[in-house]
Image (cartoon, rainbow, N blue to C red; front, top):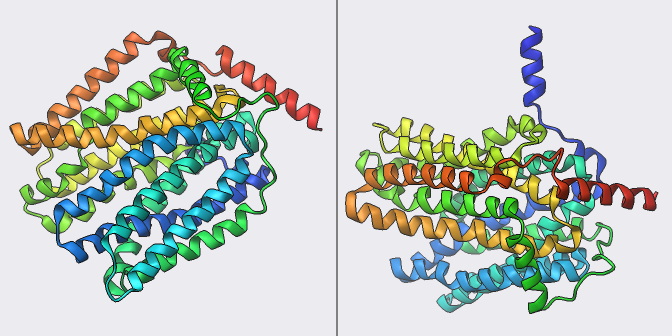
Length: 432
């Protein structure tokens, strides 16, 4: 094999050192793989069951609406408690709560007359619990993965998520159509039991000694810290802009019809995850990038370009390629953002900032699909895709120009990254 090709392959190779070096990261990674499958299966089963029970588009759409308020409230509060309490306990108790909700869905599905209200209530409750847990899961990587391995951990986590996003929904569709929703919920319940067996073995992850108690004041402190750092605000604002202007999954059913390939609808929905998985598998290079701010800007702009090109693609396969390229660019942006967060945010604030991050990357797609639908109603599917992609590029470049500290961020010289690295090295030496 030529030396140049060998060097290229080494450059693309995934760094698995976090899995090798950290027992707690291995346990969290394994737990995440297991529960992710169950969660995606339930995400397919709930709307399917609602459709079977009501045969109403509105009833299915209201499931997401019922989940919005718990996401906002619990996402912020989850960030506050993640900084104030033992994160291991939060993760385990939340996992127990999610086990209860999946069991309730299974029992309801087994009744002779399943109740619609249970789907709404359990959907809202499970979303709230998951959003309470998510900031602790995001913040805990700081405590179980070395500072210099945060980029590698971000690549591994993205690869895990994207693999599940491709395989698990297909498995969920097979289960609900072949065996019914009760079996699908039962599989989800079993995954939580297995996950708890792994999470129980993680060491205690207490808060900082001077951690502020969870309160409205502590939430405001977290928001103030984020607003005071333009590099962090750049990660939030660029992602929101990219999603608001270029997210367009709501158009896929119409696009499939226009391409005269309604049977390819599932292919369109999986395309972004396929691209993201490829980016993760070949993403070893991303862990070695030091200018993550510029990387986020470039990746988000490429996401917009790929969506704009989708408007010009004449057939299903070229549309698939364009959407896959968009998914790959979005995943690279996510890797860079996660690396910046975990390398620069102090441990005592990491949970609250993770709550803010949750709102930024969860609200953008909701608003983006609304924007895409309104623009399509005005000018058609292709117009919405093309104009949205170009608006995304313009907005991202404008934000990059307006936030020079974000654009010039360099992990090798940034004061926050160096301070967090020194703090963690001192902590490791004290423990040793």
